[in-house]
Length: 376
Image 1 (cartoon, rainbow, N blue to C red):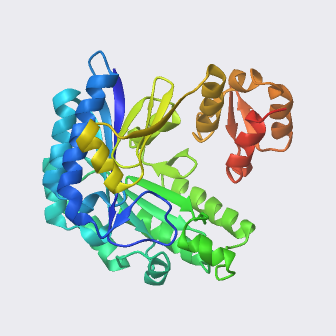
Image 2 (cartoon, rainbow, N blue to C red):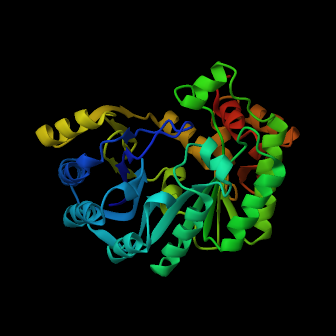
């Protein structure tokens, strides 16, 4: 059985005001203990949940800040995976990296371990915007991190950018896109800033201390990203993601295709043969559970065939080029009426036997998914 492996590394140097991921600050002294716990979780779960041979085709270290741990700690986790499941010879192994916490030496160590893809959390090339986002690196450090990655031999480097920051102009966003293209990145992710309720930004919004950009400006910025990056030869393969031909993020494609993956570490989610599980969120609780029981699952759900079909449509619509088979929508109650209305509104288009979002539809993808698969 082939599947992906997601490894959550929760350690961060500081709290970013927009982030609602599971992370901890000031607890890096626990990283070695955490790496050992993750290794044990991999071994225990593979032994308990899979009866046949297992192979990891992709591995993704996300966070948090994966580069906050040492290369030897990442090595122990990879060794655990290889010892019980094996890594495909062509496995894509990605590590997210904070530009302010890496250098050529760290990247060379990761490269020697078999890591072959980096995802740099640059977010912006403007220092004022970086301060607004609470990032601990500067634009100069981001550029140095990119150079260091190339010096270490990485040939597949991705970059994250955030747009629609309060006060950001369309001109400034265009400059970020130009800079990213000029660097020659293999992959670029562009994320529209979302203000989540439990974040510092969410609190500022409630108190009237943060003003989001108008929706039409946000849409214009997203459109600018599509135009600039596709004109530069990038394939727009998922709502937020652009890649050079043949260099789409294979691990993330697995999510959108509904493939199986095992998630390990604090708060990690897994999806295996229609069953979703999730781990405990707190670091202390996670360590105690793993060291005591070998697993730290907090909850689970098994999707019904109808739920799996709905999820397949919701995820499939994110795949900009492929879309989803029309029959998956027509099989849903009221599907024909819904799809006809969305076509009339120029939000989706039918190409052969598939339905995909139009340029206009990309701007409101979540609302379209709800409309297509909601109750009549």
